[in-house]
Figure (tube, helix red, strand yellow):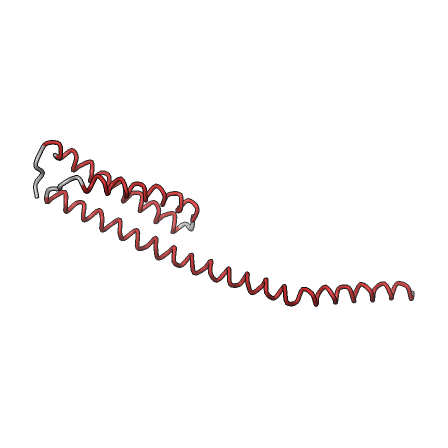
Length: 137
C-alpha cells in the first residue's frame, strides 16, 4: 500500500505518526496522573485526549500509509492501548473505593436517622436531671 501522490507523501505520513506519538505521550501522562491519584487533573487531561483522538481519526482516515509507517503506527497504538488498560484498571478500582465510601456514608446517615431522636430525648432527660439536682442542693 504505497502512497499515490506527493500530497500524501512522507511529510504527511510523518505528521500522522507524530500525532500518534503525541497521543502516546498524552496517554502516558494520564497514566502518571492515575498512579498519583490526581483524578481531577486526569479528567481534564482526558478531555484533551478525546479531542486529539477525534482529530487523529479524521487525519488517519484520509491517508494511506506505507509498510514501515503502518508498523510504527501499530507499535504506537499498542503502547497507547497498554496505558489505556492500566488507566481503566485504576479508574475501576477508584470507582469501587468511592462506592464503598458512599455505602458507609449512607449507613451512617441511616443510623443517625434511626438513633438521633433517641439521643435527643436522652439529652433532654439528662438536662432535666441536672436541673433537678441543682434545685435540690
